[in-house]
Length: 385
Ligand code: NZQ
Ligand code: ZN
Image (tube, rainbow, N blue to C red; front, side, top):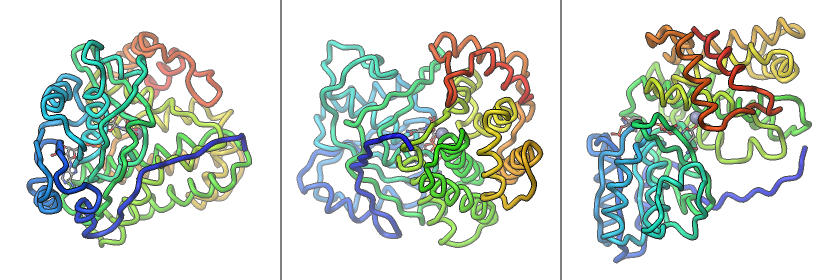
């Protein structure tokens, strides 16, 4: 295990009815910018619960943050926010709304003479950000309690992230009952995304990070067990465990003190930027192909994963391949295809475009060893046809 410093400042309110905790978190009389997406919160009762809990606050709303939040949309919210001068931003939604709110929180506080697009990609130093709280409605990204945000600019085919401790949400509400209104596509996406966050920090090479490994294996096993149950419409406890699992996958503890990969996400972001695929759809296509491409260097961890997560027996390369096959079957069971052809995308064309995009974005040394080149990534995409 390598040395690390860990600090996650986000207070978590977990469980049914916890949206009411907003009343304690937000002092009466506060000015609150409430941001949300396309309106699912108005249909499932989340919006009403928030308004009730924030009865004593002065609220301005900004809605319409889309999946893969767009820079231009977020800038409209920044204009509203610079005028309104909120004490708090409350984000109600999935990762897109939470990520969008992080950008808005940083951009409102930025010197207006500076270009907010520079926030993305960490090309500018942030001095402050508006305090943020998140009401999570879709377990997937872990954005509700991490310091990362991913912003898309479709016009230029850019989907880029920034990370800054200033945008850690001060608190997050995780009420699993709000998952009842999630369509199967988003349930599948959420479980696959959380699963891949865990593999990005686990399927590398042995580093004697035993606690982190077993935490990862606990999350992966739980998602593999309960993801299908959720799709089949099973009970509250499945929702609660999946919501908690998705949170813990990217809370920060799995990856400390050990190597991390993240190449699947880097390739996935380019596939979304080019073709507009859902985030998790890109991961399901990329991960199995990447694992096959990197079989030799990942073999030891794949064998461990095969035994501990999938309960498989055997040895070496054959067992590693069996674990990849189990992963593929799981993604397909969650309704998230593992082939680009399922999305009507030509793999050769996609490979070429992804390679160009990775070079343009300076992502030229990916993976836990920094050895995956854009050409390797193109081969991974081409083989995912
Ligand atoms: O817009 P609304 O009406 O809220 O509908 C959303 C949206 O259409 C809907 N939804 C959310 N909760 C619902 C619901 N529908 C019914 N009932 C509910 N309870 O689901 C759709 C997708 O929402 P979105 O927020 O886009 O999904 P997700 O949480 O998967 O977020 C994806 C975004 O997060 C980024 C992705 O790249 C992508 O842009 N990520 C952020 C990360 C981070 N900050 O750490 C890490 C991830 O790897 C990821 O990159
Ligand atoms: Zn992800």
